[in-house]
Image 1 (cartoon, helix red, strand yellow):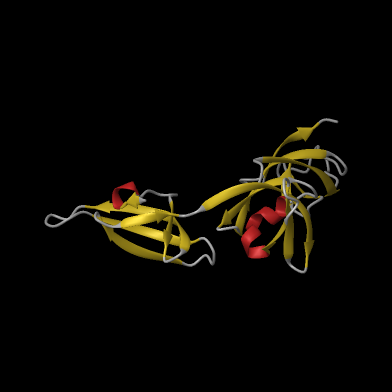
Image 2: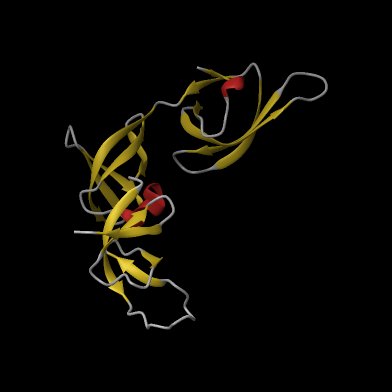
Length: 187
């Protein structure tokens, strides 16, 4: 159990049988009376956000969340299929649950699937992935109008800016947190 003094940004709590994450937190001490804790909360199941004020005597249940290593298998009819590496059980997540991570899902990549009472909520990718460039326009030497980067498309369909020396068929490393090119991968 948490008390109001335990509240902080990023804490996951359970309110009315739903998991919430605190996205903003403010401690308010009025001149008279007891301290207040103003929080912005986001429902981890449906994404709804709201503000709520708690008093110092309020208590909260910890959200029963767990992360499991799972392997991405395929996408079918707008749903993404992941398989538990130990039990071989498969779970499906919607496009909303996967979010921006869909740009970096490679076949058989291992991800952390966040579960609330055995229901999947979302995924966490590895920080870096290596992908093959599938489309890269040639770069004209002396082309200073477009700057020192050019757009490419990688095998997942994601488009990003890379240095002009990157060619089609090369492997590059991308930071999945920002979607930015990091380096060329040898071999």
